[in-house]
Image (cartoon, rainbow, N blue to C red; front, side, top):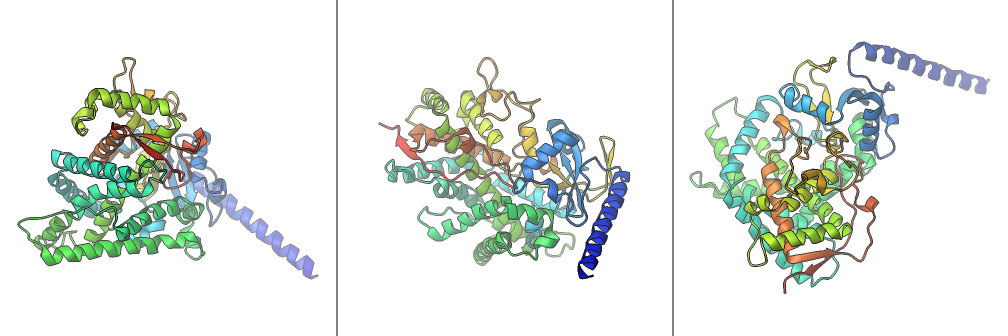
Length: 496
């Protein structure tokens, strides 16, 4: 009897699940959302994701359901945009409608809609406008910031030289060099490479990238209501961010104690001065919470994405020594060895420009983009997307769109060169996203990539005892970020 009762219970549960599934399926299809796989109760389309391969799975869904489809993260419908044309139509042609910032459960508990990256509405507009103006005032896109990058690039060359051509993992020195550029703007000073406390903090950035991209991090994004109660590595993300915030808060306190409103030293000084000026304005978004979280946004984004791209770059150039050799020849011809590279050299170095663009396209550091949301009920390609629905414009499908790039899965600088060898732009080049939410630091990142990479190759040849395969250099295409494999290389001096 007990077995019969258990069998009846199981049968009842199966029938109930099938009924719920069937009802959800019918309701879902009446909403005029884009097509997509039918979700299961509670877990949504979780079972349609191959273990640890969210990005690859979503790309495959795009091939099956088309460039606009609906995918359920748990019980929450999310619209996925795949391919250049769909992403362009949404983020540029209907840019205002898609200008909201979507949810990221892995970090939302801390940011909670504050800070320039994760805010919306008037708060976002105020913070973005102020940040763009302040960063420009501190040299973003100007000669002054170029000089800071040049100085840091020479510091990096000095540090590399001390290793005397021994094999090293470039992760630490790259993250320190890149971080020092944004630190000089945000904090008003750089940090020495021997500062182990600061290096430990920077390594937390990479750990956050890795955790958010892991299988655990992907589950956290899809079914947060369940994963919040499941022990695992994803539970370390918020404590790590809290440690970063403590560092930023300490720097803010240091500035508060020594600030001179008539002579701002950095971004923090400018924000504090703005807070004091708007003290009586109830509509102002300039408060301590937005200050600390915006500084962390700038600090994190200005450090991890560029340093990760450079790590991809070194790995790719080791794999393809013939490309590295062509870059050396162009550097020797245009710049030589008697002066530092400057940003004006870029227009005379089409091959270097093409290789850097291809490194960004191929390495695809943020493949899923940071989620958007529609700020009102939106009609898109005949479908209805309700206000507040999150949207993922997949940058990976833009950067690998076969209609835009001849060999999308291969590393090929020719994607950005015309028949005469001149640099050729591509509208589908969107590593910084596009539209109203395009990365604040695009100009700085482009300048850093050119000056750091050109300076390194002016002084060194990159080699490794390890033989890397195409699989080794290809991005993982798993979750939030594409982090390269760990590797070691030697910097062989080219200076006589």
